[in-house]
View 1 (tube, rainbow, N blue to C red):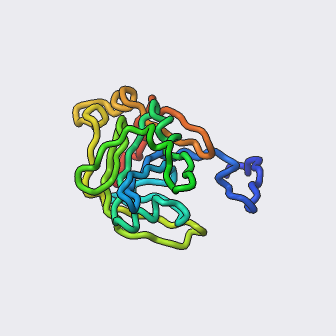
View 2 (spheres, helix red, strand yellow; view 1 turned 120 degrees about the vertical axis):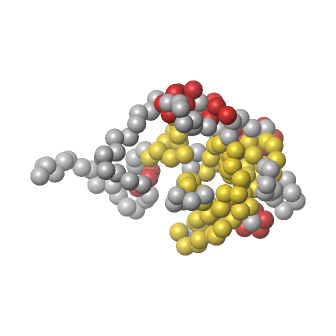
Length: 200
C-alpha cells in the first residue's frame, strides 16, 4: 500500500472549484428572447449526457438562457475554436437597462436549420436541441437537458475511419476552459490506454 501523500485540505465554506483548475468544454448556448431577438451565452458546465443524443448544461433562473429555453422548448449549442475565444467573451457581456446585450452585435450568427435559434459562425460543432427536461434543485441552478434533433460540423472537424484522430485534433484544435478563468488550445492528443478486455 502506498504511503499517504501530503495533502492540503480545501475549505468547504466556498466552492472547491475556485481552489483548483478543472478542464471543461466551453460552449455557446443560443436561444431566442420573447421578442424573437437572438441571445447567446457561454457555458462551461455543459456536456453530453449518457451515450444517447442528449446534451445538458447548468444554468440559473436569473439568466435569460434558461428562461428562453423553457419558454420556447429549444436551444442551440455552438462549440467555438480556440481562435474564437473573443466570441465567447463577447457572449458573456452584460445586459443594459432595456435587458438587451449590446456585445452580441460583435458575434456573427446564422439561423439553426431545425429548431429556432442562433448558431455562432466559425465553430467546430453545432447542436440543435429540444428541451427534454429541466431539473431544479442544485442550489440556485438547474440542469437543462436537451435531445439533439440536428447536428452539423465543418468537414475538417469530422473524424474519418481511415484517418488518425491525432491528426484531426492537430489540424483543428479544441478549446478547453480551465475553470476558473483560463483557457487552452488542445492541439496534441494521445490514444487512451484502455485495458485489452475493456468494453464500452
